[in-house]
Image (cartoon, one colour):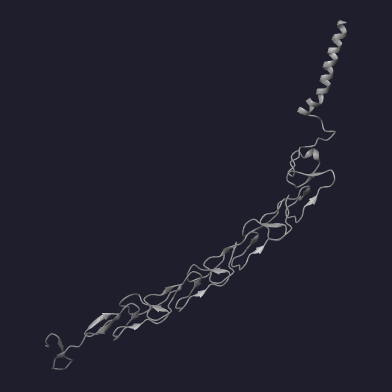
Length: 267
């Protein structure tokens, strides 16, 4: 038998000093001992040295047997990376990439493996956006992935960033891109929704309180434009205080007549 620290080959009667042990995966020989590979490098079983991880890969830490391909949403721009680098917001990547790709216009990313379409009511007018922009007043986007917002057509207004609604009766829309519809001018009405102009009332008629119809002054007790008081028609019956004021002259005349009659009786 060989003494400790020596060995012999099969069939040999001579013992020789033992060499350094064979290193396992993730280790390399340093003199007579095996040492773990540093982070960013790797070694297979029996390798004499650790090798730097190539681009698009990184290591899982010290003593790595292999380098790991960068996952989607990350990239490996140089060799010997300790770990893969995450994409910045506005960029994305598939697995095994040396760089991230900017999101196209109409899309956005928070820094991941995917670029997403801008939601309805928003738009993306540039590349590499981390978030999409809300449509400005009077404009909408009705589908996802839009690069611009569309102005509402005449007769409509932007009720939200995704819906154009008809101008209500009593208002009008004579230009595109309205945020709200203006009320009809004094003396004019619009009887239906979605009108591009208002119509003047004919002679003898005035707009009602909502400027949605032309009515006679007698039926318009509370006009919206001007706040004028109601005008009584000549053939309209007297009521309430109007009836009292109308009868007052007759009551005064009757009172004088009775006094005159009493004085004549005493004479």
